[in-house]
Length: 561
Ligand SMILES: *[C@@H]1O[C@H](CO)[C@@H](O)[C@H](O)[C@H]1NC(C)=O
Ligand SMILES: *[C@@H]1O[C@H](CO)[C@@H](O)[C@H](O)[C@H]1NC(C)=O
Ligand SMILES: *[C@@H]1O[C@H](CO)[C@@H](O)[C@H](O)[C@H]1NC(C)=O
Ligand SMILES: *[C@@H]1O[C@H](CO)[C@@H](O)[C@H](O)[C@H]1NC(C)=O
Ligand SMILES: *[C@@H]1O[C@H](CO)[C@@H](O)[C@H](O)[C@H]1NC(C)=O
Ligand SMILES: *[C@@H]1O[C@H](CO)[C@@H](O)[C@H](O)[C@H]1NC(C)=O
Image (cartoon, rainbow, N blue to C red; front, side, top):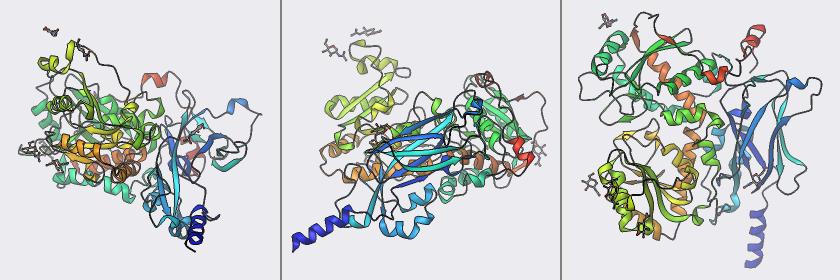
C-alpha cells in the first residue's frame, strides 16, 4: 500500500501538466524591441534542463534586397546555473499575467540548482524553471533592422524541430541601434522606471536629495565648489555640466578629468532615448565623495560612491555604468556574462576564499596576513603595490614582482568571495553578487547606489570592518555540511541582481536622479558659450553616423511602439 502510494506520488511529481508552459520568455529585449540598449537583453525560463540552440533570425529570407539584412550579434548565456521554482497554483492562476520579468520574480521561490526538484514535501506543487540570458546588439557600423526577426529555440534532444518561436519585430516596425537618436517622451513609462523594484532602488535618490528640498541655487553652489576644490587641482576633479535642449555641455576643473567620459556617455545615451530637463549639475570625478556632513552646508554634488561622513548624491559607479554602456563590446566584467558563465556548481568548487586586488586599504593586507596563518582556507593575494610599498617584501615572498593574473570569471572556481573596500567601496560587488559563490562583505562606511537594498545574512554574510571575525566565519563555512542555507543566500543575491542591477534599472536610476535633481533647481547660471558641447566618441563616428534614427518615422506618422 505504502509502495503504491509512493509510486503514485512519484508519478505526480514527474508529470507537470501539459497546460503549464515549457518556456517563458520575458525582458525588455523581447517585450519591446523599440527600447534601445547597447545590448538588448531578455531571459528564457525553461522547464527542460538543457536547451538546444537559441537563434535570432529573419522570419523569412528576404532575397530581393540583400543590402537590407539585419546585422545582429546575439550572445546566449546558458550556464547561469540558476533556477527558480514556481507554484503550480500560481502558474495556473496567473499564467496569463506572466508577461514581464517582474511577474516572474514576484512568484519565484528558492531553487537549488544542484537539486532542482527539491526534497521537501511541497515538491509536487512546484515547477522548476531554468534561466538563460540572451542579449543582442548591432554589429559595428549597422544602424537599423527593418526585417522581421524571430526568436527560435530548439530542444536539446531533437535539435531539428523548434520548441519555441516568437517574433521579435516585424517589417512595419524597424528598430534601431542604440547609437541612433530615438527620443521618446514616454521612454520612462516604457522602461517601467516607476516599477516597484525601481522605486525601491530609487529610495536612495529621495534620501540623497532630501537636504535640498528647499531648492538648489546653482550659481551659489558652483561658486562654492570652485572655492572649496578648484584651488587643489591635483587632488580634486569635478565637472560642471549643463543640459540645454537635450544637449549636454561641460567644463571640468582639476587635472585628472578623464573619468568624465563615463558620465558624458551616459548622458548622450539617455538623451538619445528621451528628453532630459534643462539643468546644471556638478559631477565629482574622484572616488572620494566630497560633501562632508560636518561642513556647514551640504553641497549637491553627484558622486560614484557615498559614505556615512558625506552626503553626495550617489550614482551607479563608473565601473557598472561602463559595463552597461559598452554592452557586449566590453572585454572585462559585466553582469550578464558573469551571471551567465558559471562553470561550477557550488559543491564542486574549491572550498576556500578567493580574493585578488590592489593594496589600497590596510584591511586587504590584513586579509593576506590571515591567509598566512591558515593557507588552506584562503587563496588571496595583492596584485599591485602602491600605497604600502614598504611592506611589499612581507607580502611578496622572494621579491616576486608580479603574481599570475587570474581572470575574474575564475574567481568563481572558489566557493567564497570577499568584498573589501579599496580607497572607497570596492566597485566589484555587483559582479560578485552575480556569480554562483557566497559573498562575504566587509562592513564599511562606503556604499554604492544599491547597498540599501542588501541585507546582511540574506544577500551576503557580513564581517567586521577590520576583518576580526573573518577567519572564524570562514572556518565554520568550510566545515559546514549543510550547504542549503549558503545556497539560499547565493540565490537571493542573484535574484537581487536580476531585480536591481540589470541595464534597464541603471538607466532608470540615472534618469530619475537627474530629473528629480533638476526639479529642485531654483536659480541657474546664465548660459556660458565657452562650455564644451559633448559629442560621441570618435571611434563611433568612424563608422559614419546613424542615417536618421527613428526621428524620421516619428514625424511621418504615429510612432508605433
Ligand atoms: C548551451 O548551449 C550550447 C550551444 O547551444 C550547448 O551545446 C550546451 O549544451 C548548452 N548548455 C546548457 C547548460 O544548456
Ligand atoms: C543665487 O545665488 C546667487 C549668488 O550667491 C545670488 O546672487 C542669487 O540671488 C541667488 N538666487 C536665488 C534665487 O536665491
Ligand atoms: C620562495 O622561495 C622559497 C625557497 O626558495 C620557495 O620554496 C617558495 O616556493 C618561493 N615562493 C614563491 C612565492 O615563489
Ligand atoms: C627585495 O627587494 C628590495 C628592493 O627591491 C631589496 O631591498 C631587498 O633586499 C630584496 N629582498 C630579498 C630577500 O631579495
Ligand atoms: C562579524 O562582526 C560583525 C560586526 O560586529 C557582525 O555583524 C557579524 O555578524 C559578525 N560575523 C560573524 C560571523 O561573527
Ligand atoms: C570589530 O571591529 C572593531 C574595530 O574595527 C573592533 O573594535 C571590534 O572589537 C570588532 N568586533 C568584533 C566582534 O570582532
